[in-house]
Amino acid sequence: MFGTRRQWWRRSAGRRWIALALAWAAIYLVFALAWAAGAPGYPYGRHWDPSPVPVSLLDAVPAQAGVTVIIAGTGLVLISIGRFLITATGRLSARFATSTILVCCLGLVLVGDYRPLMAVARVPIFLITRTFWHVAEGRVGVGEFVSAMFSIPALHGFWQLGGILVLLMATVEFWRRTRSGCSDCGRPPQLSWWTTRSGARRWGLIATIIAVICPIPYAVTRYMLLFGFPADGISRALIEQGEAQTPGIWIFGAGLATLGVLGAVLTLGLSQRWGERWPFWVPILRGRPINPVVAIIPAGFVSLLWPGSSLMLVRVNLQKTLADSGAAAPDVAHLLLSPMNLWVFWGFALAGATLAYWLRRRPDCATCHRGEEPMRGVWRSRSTDGATGIVGTAAEGR
Picture 1 (cartoon, rainbow, N blue to C red):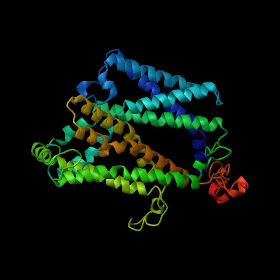
Picture 2: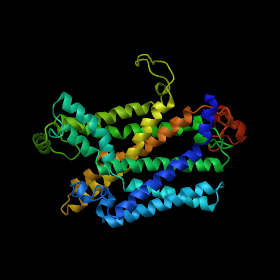
Picture 3: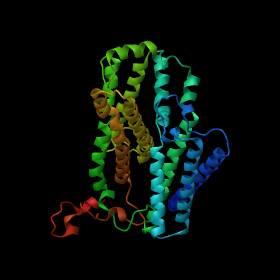
Picture 4: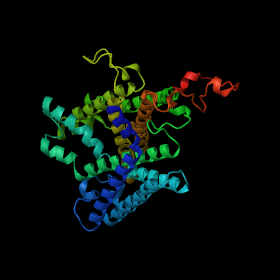
């Protein structure tokens, strides 16, 4: 009984994601029309953030122009998703609809900002530093800090991130169906090399290494600032001034850096054995298989947060540097060598590592058995590639 329900749930996944995408776009369109009619709560504008540089690209444009962009984008998404519902083949219209959705997802990333990321990262660090060191963000109240973090722009950012997820999943499931994918697992009749376990292990290791390296330089600079050493363009005088104006600010920064280091350590598990079985130092669970969802959900969530946040930080730093007409060579060098520039690659690398982990951990399909077939592509085996000399084994298709 439960097996039948689970198979029905998987087979309806394509329609389910399309329905979620339609609902997301329709709700977003309703809000945009309300904002156009003068309803409160428009999430963009300079009044939300006192920064001299616009946090989001849409903060710099009038509200009418921003609302027009949202209405146009959601309208295109609704038309494209609707096309997925009425066509069963990958014709030109479906390809155009796919391109439209991908462009809209890219637009959501470009207009995104760091407020959702700050809400996730700063609230736990605020509570910890306030509890154990009695200093946090200039002794701001807990309620005031939490409400500031989860402001309307931040909640709107979470809504946009959810939209990116459902739009991409709806697109993937549509193309699985049109390319004769298995109704249960979605695998196509013939696997490409990068979707097999061996292929995912190879390129996933590269993505994991990049994702692990990216946060380390930032963490090192924040630990240096904590102990009074100049780093990341911040002099010793600025360190003392910052501590005097906002007590505990460098402890707070070191806490954020520690989250990055812990994330880097956990990212290693996406390509290590202890990411598949609980390690010996975990009580009760040691030695048991790890459900892939335990790693995929948090890693996927964090990878959604990073691209828009990192691009926004790089853009803001660039605008601040260019706005200073007397910017000297050291300022430009600091801009180019800032450790936060690596964050642009962090989110995409973590997303790739998470995808590779899922491809590697998904079981062979009991319905189509396609997970057991040899792969095709540059990593084909000798047995399937004849005398071409390409290295591999037939077992790599698993």
